[in-house]
Length: 227
Image 1: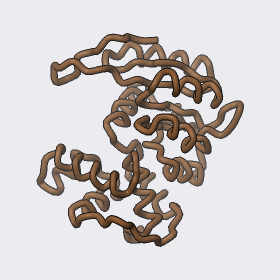
Image 2: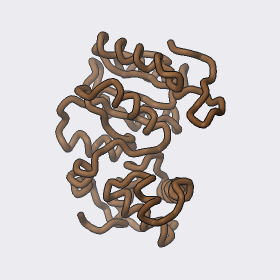
Image 3: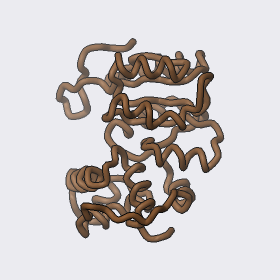
């Protein structure tokens, strides 16, 4: 599906489109969403999977950048399979499609490495924005929801082998407050590029592939104060 050629981005340079795989057994919803994605010059729907089995196969063959993953699927729990699916493509960001999901399910998704959540009731424009944000490393969660879920993340109190710098801890704390990269840059009076570098460094040290996963690990190992 979609355009296979590179598309110009907002900087005027040529960039490959963001490759999106939709995993949802609601055929009408999934097909409609795929059509919307394919109308965007910087997005490309590379497939639709109606089951986890199909998702595993398509991840291997289509190399998606972003996985839009339904919570409930005919052959299993989408959130419960996040770790397994991410293992098939480490660079892939996972965005969970939600209706009204309990907090414990959202916590499970965060701890499994999801980039965030997008409600099925939101506009298609918000879905495409969510895909772009996930592809660029942003956390897709409101500050209010983040504040509610962080205290529910598991804690083991383990120590890190490699400590974060003072600035990286500061950035981590601001992430826990729900701030975006731009907001963190403004707060610290640095460039967004500098913030991205700090997040990349702290994520590497924590072994995380998304902002939310980094926060999950930090909470679990006692690197953030109780909130």
